[in-house]
Length: 288
Image (cartoon, rainbow, N blue to C red; front, side, top):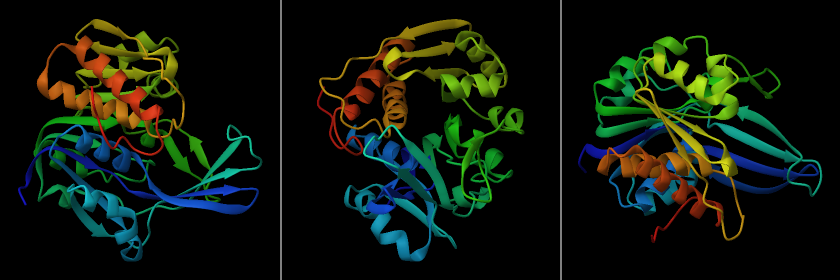
């Protein structure tokens, strides 16, 4: 197994529990690392994942990654990160999200065995990344990509997820080349209401490329004072929005390896995200 990959995704593969009217309907793997790595693999890249789960959950949660030939650098954790999506009725828009447990954080030691063109960091909570991780990771890749959502998520003592500012954002973002956030996250991170102004502020912290997504309203790519407005591609049918943002990032990284035309890169990312929206689960195949 080579330790030089196109992309290495760092993040907790989660146990996602779907509960309707108090009854568990489904348990399945989830998390940014799950959706992004499978999409990258489907696009044809050499992909690694650095993740942590409990020993008893390892085989079940990582089976699909193993089956697809994704290189998994697994460390045992006392806990697996567990997300419960609780629906009080058949209306799937009426959801309460609760975190049942959080796996051990990622440290400098966890990246020692892996080198890649891109590292993509998919934290799910603000407890997922240790302070010594950033500098060590930056030495193991050419580009650092970050999904900002996890750093804005604090888990309360009762397991509820609340949005909070990222206290150490300047330290973390100083290592990042590509930052992906949605519009709400961009406002919270930057303190700016306008998403273009927010992108400029976020870029001033270090990221060279800032991606601001807005689902069906399209997305924005900001780089060196220039904005690229990327349209959304309407789906033939809307089936499963879970993981669309992760799939957008996968498409962006895939095309970014091949091109410096950021409008083209953004449009490809949007197309890939729409393809995922049209199907259940992660993007498991890609035919242009």
